[in-house]
Length: 343
Image 1: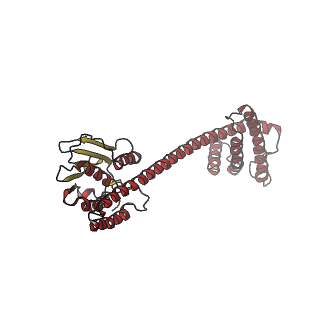
Image 2 (image 1 turned 60 degrees about the vertical axis):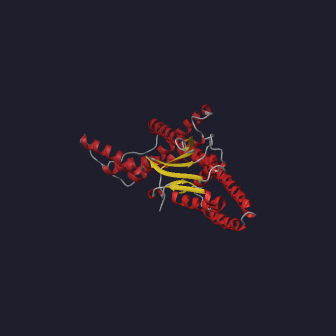
Image 3 (image 1 turned 90 degrees about the horizontal axis):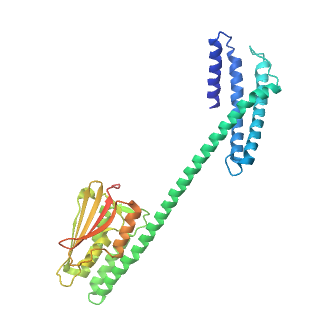
C-alpha cells in the first residue's frame, strides 16, 4: 500500500514537472515521496492505537479530543523530523541531482502541521468506522450463534422428551401381552431392541431421509402387529423419487401412533391408517389419515405436539402440523421444506 501511494505521488510530481518544462530529477522526487510515505506508514499503527486507546467519540470526549490533538501534533513532529533526516541522508549526502537543503527548521514543522492533522483525522475516522462495523458484525454473529445454541438445546430437549414417551407406550403394549401371549411379548421385545438401535442413534443431526424414516416405521409396525394381530392395516403411499427427502428424525412413528390410537375403536373390525407422502411445489407434504369417528380433530398426542414443536424450531414459519376432519376420519397434515440429502 505504501509503495503504491509513493509511486502515485512520484508520478504526479514528476509528470507535472515535465509538463511545465522543468527538469525531471526523477530520483530525487522518488526518494522524497518514498521517505514521506513510508515514514507515515510506520506511524499509522501508532495513530490507530491512540484512537482505540482514547476514542474521540466516547463518553470522555471532552478529555480525549484535546489529547488526540496533542498526539496528532506529536506524530506530525516525528514524521517531519524522520522524513527530513532520511532525505538529507539519502539525497543531500550522496549528492543526488537537484538536492536542496533538508535542514530542519520551525517553518518546515509549521508547513507540515496541517497535512499531519488531516492525515491523523482521516486515520481516526477510518479506525472508528471500521471498529464500529466490526463491533456490530461481531454482535450480530454472537446473536446468531446464541440463537443456534438455543435452538439446538430446545431440539435436544424435545428429542429427549420423545424417547421415554415412545418407550413407555411400547412397554405398556408388551405388558399387555406378557400373560396373554408370552411368545408374542418376547418377539416384541426383540423387535423393540432393533427399533431402538435404528432410531435413537448417536447421530447429532436432527434430520434424516424419508427412506430411513420409513424403515423405522416398518420396525414399529412389526411390533404393533404383534399387539393388534389381524386388526391392524397400515397403507404407506410414498413415491420412490422422494426417498432422499429430508425430514425430522422419528417423525412418522408418532403420527401413525396417534392415528392408531384414534382408530382403535372396539366397534370396528380394523384399525386402519393411511400415510400419503407427496411433493407439492417447494414443500414435502405428509398426510396421515385414520378411520375413526372421533369428533376432536386436534392432535393431543405427546408425539404429535412434539413433532410440531420440532418443525417450528427447524424450519420456522410456513411449515408445521395441522389436522382436519374428513369423511373417513381425522387427517393430520405435515408440511416441510422440500430438500434432499445425500445418497
